[in-house]
Image 1: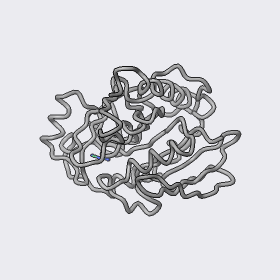
Image 2 (image 1 turned 120 degrees about the vertical axis):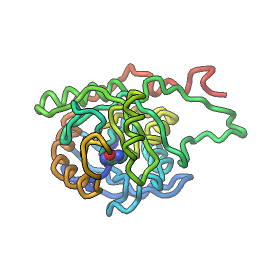
Image 3 (image 1 turned 180 degrees about the vertical axis):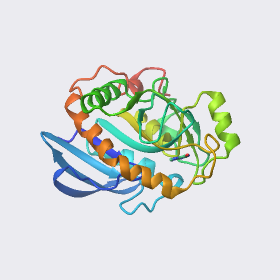
Length: 263
Ligand code: HPA
């Protein structure tokens, strides 16, 4: 049974490295989602390109609820999600990988929950530890094994986009304690938690954020840098599969069954 899914962000569109790939169309209450399912060594892996196969869906228009619900319906337990990010600090350099451990949400206009009250009641979901520590550990081991430059932890600031940030916004995020800026981890990680799925973020630093270094930002600069680092990201993800524990002790799946969390 397929337990692990990869959500590929900017630059990560095709399920290469997987054998015997088949395409399925998963119907959800939020719309249909095309999912590739293939094999990597002994592991079956599902794959969704977040921005569509042609990179045609911008971050603020992604159907996050459909993607996450489709993975849940497929029986997925673990999500490894890549994301292109700008860096707020010189120690996180373009070409390096960061396993975010916290986020700050500056999105404005997204469907950010499955719970809309009514008969289901009111749901407040704990997000103290948003990214699964056990998935992060597996990725970290894989990074060490492969000699990749992987930072263990960082705060991902999620902006609404699709525009890049102003230099003043980046300065503010830095003062607030942010390390990375991107446009997709929220609400994806929150929706995964609402359905009890373990979720890890693999941030790929593509640029220094606005104003951190002189000059302007371009989307092509982000794409070029991603292109150069896709192979490393794939290697990191695929090598982490063997380290994913079968039985996890994290709280990700338990949180929603806590009394007092729901209703
Ligand atoms: N800002 C927001 N999103 C991004 C950036 C950035 O600088 N780089 C890659 N994705």
